[in-house]
Image (cartoon, rainbow, N blue to C red):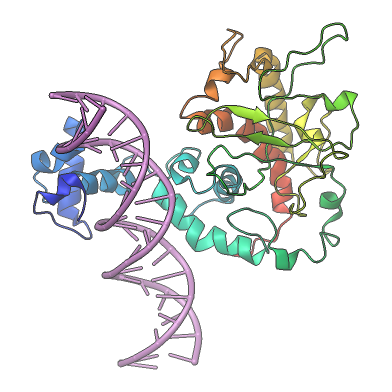
Length: 331
DNA sequence: AAGCTAGTCAACCGCCACTCC
DNA sequence: CGGAGTGGCGGTTGACTAGCT
């Protein structure tokens, strides 16, 4: 069958020879690839354009980083996968020099097995039921004592799927308004400042996929009215420590935080100070011209990437890294 | 040395979304 | 509006390799 562009032509399949690689590299570096379907013809290759594109992206591109994945890259993949699922192209964008194919292969061949060995469902990052009998009672103390907040985010999900709760930090909420100035709650977003409410209340956030990866639909639920999600991961995956969520009350997750992480946290705080308007989000998608266009960001097809860039990566991963390091990685 | 098995990874397949006519 | 062409993506396959028996 094949692709439309391939079905008409007599094309070669299988592994690429060094000569073919050379032809392709030579052509792309001198002419670019404005139209992949015409590349094989002009480059003198008996391949379909799609095959050329794949070969270039996955193997010949000059900015590719070859070799095994670092521990940091591995952690990034796990953390981003927890939020985005099998969206390898999006995940790969957070790993400079890595391709979606590479990430996918690495996940399937290594990370997946590690997670399973940890008793974690690689799809949801939750504990596999058969491993939940101890309910986390024998976890390291540092993971046991944390106040966990269930978090769901289904920006990529289809109806009926259960989202893996990500370990993520959202931008902090706006400061609590004066009592005489009730906060304006946009449609679909309910915010309750945890500093003014029961500290044990569970916040349930969800990001719904309304337009491709669009509007955030943030809702909270009180632990009194709606019990927290029952199938949470006792390892702490997918839950927000309230200290992480609200930077105003940030405390070190663990005493042994290393200097590098301290430095990263300092950088983060500096960024927050430099970009205070970032938090003035409008979840209706209206742009109030108050700095970075967060509202629109959630409504753009590349929402995930920007959302991750602006929220998760600088803080969630780093804050979480120490937790991840608690796990025995014995690959 | 030969056969088997499991792991890795490049490449293909099929689908979807977008653009253009 | 609808079909063709194309790019992009995720899932899957199959060739190759290393390790074991």
